[in-house]
Image (cartoon, helix red, strand yellow):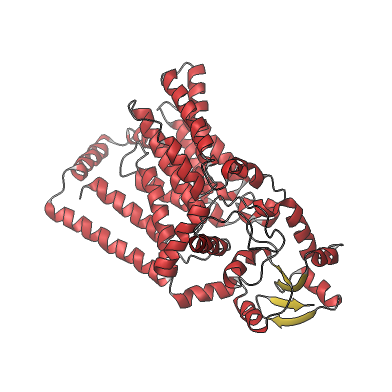
Length: 487
């Protein structure tokens, strides 16, 4: 095993270990239920069957094929398979980033680890992770296309057809292509060396066809509306934390700033020519990450190759300032390191990789044992309250906490939810009424009456709980996580 292959394998093993975690997420459960329903029916869900507030209405289920992959993983190996689904996709995305770098194999691992630390909060068992992997693969393909004139662009069309069926994040790919086009135009206007206009026209033309091909989907042309429907929900940042701007007082979100500052610093001090694409892509996806933390992933994937390319030059400049003896010794050690390995060295390196891979898999097994997963679920979701409802069968529609909606779709399917994570389905009309009712604002009684609600499953600190007790509702169950009220 060469030193390049050794560092590559070690880096991906580290990413696998980072991403192998307990696969519990508020949206996982409704995605799983939808995937199971699709497999059972033999066709994707295109109407809502999970809520009572939108029951029977059209649902642009943009992740139907991604949901099927989750359901198949669940059937194949339960929690462990879902954890591996996340870990493999995360590692695959970082593998594409690795191969998109113009930098030494000694520098790449450090940049990859930093980028992985930034992206890791969005490594969750949801179809969204498929979009991040496809985004990284597209970045690599365009990077190769710029270097290889013979590389065709027609594969963009089937690629976006697949992407549009796996997850609705395909606009990320179109934005990446747009960054290439705008960056190329900037290079031309500044008189810098750039690709022939014929190649830019070809990229623009094929990207338009790719965007149109997204409509080859059970949802048809409505797939084009997904990005507008999602960002058009006004209460998005109030309801979903990942759509809010990052809070850099939290240490876990600070790696974003580290990567941004490192990239800007490398661009400032590098002697290599900064391309228009590098400026546009870093600026665009940094802005998106500063607007919503769910965009940390695309920013990490686009910034890492830029950082690696220019940081290598900055380090080389610093190296010239070292004493000649130190520099000569370092260069000698580097040549020795890059030399073809002996059979013993290859076996040793392979053994190290296998050992660490085994430890990563052992970690994945440890955090996905059913008892451990259930303890995590019981701490985050109303598992005991659900058991009480299943046993006692209170009558009437259910009013639930927003973050519990997906879990209830999975664990309590006989009770349609009021709301869940499908914000593009509910829109402002339902979500505003829901938020007002949960906060016990004037008119909450009308909302519950209009929705036929006779059972409420709330957190102990929900303002609506006190209002329900004052209105004569009975508190029929309580624990540290949830309270059940019945009218």
